[in-house]
Image 1 (cartoon, rainbow, N blue to C red):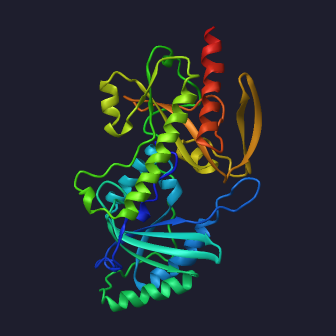
Image 2: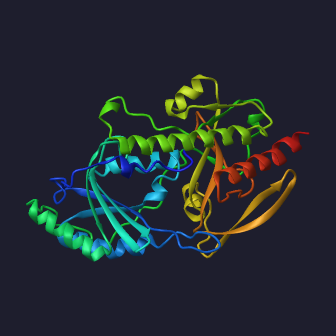
Image 3: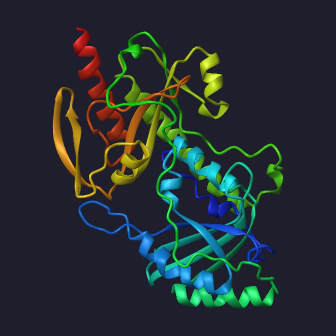
Length: 354
């Protein structure tokens, strides 16, 4: 579980060499655009941006078979695992990342191309090609020139005319309940700590540049602070729990006699509801959050469906059942969302017992 995803783009090894099979294999595209500003942040129209880009990819021979929102992919541990498997099953060889970034001079489009690794999207020192331009048309034109200069052979002849979007995955692998489980009164809850970045076993840390070490150090310091806050918030939980290292896996937690683990997703309210298999009414414009103001006092807050939020839930480690709680208690920060969820749990489970 992470407070914010480590900016792994800063850890890549930029070599500006295109994958030799870029025009003869399948590619997945991950899109990230700035949020619209207002009272609440609203996700930008990433599909419209992808639509405007796909025709350019098609003309230069890139077989972009799947488009994802990068924030949905990284929404949480269950979502990331669900999205990764189809990349392997569909024999996708290359990854393109399209990011629109706001600067003081206006928007800038950043394109990163890299080979797909086996078990994660990006890894430290992974070779990558990168282009930055002020407009997508300029960027596609330069990419075409670089492809021509590298003399890549085009063998992609059946490219989709329109982009295909993938916004959902099997994040829920068991039955789901819009309630809490009373089993937690007798079962110890595993609460994953936010994970520091650790160098992979096959990476010599002495070979890492100082800039990358600085990025990792800053991130790990933020994780320490987040874990302090997590420990503080969890003190209100009325039953047995333990802060744990999730990286060792759910089977390891089960062998340690945990039955349940606390999880969360972080994306727009609409995306989170889809990932958690809620019934989504596509005519809705806002979701109502049951928000805790202080102990015993709650209020209702309307949050737009495309505002990024956090939502906590509990997962059974054996049969993968999930318990979402009996109220929609998502919120703008992970701290507020966790407080909402714990207080709703106490109101529902503890007070009913008493």
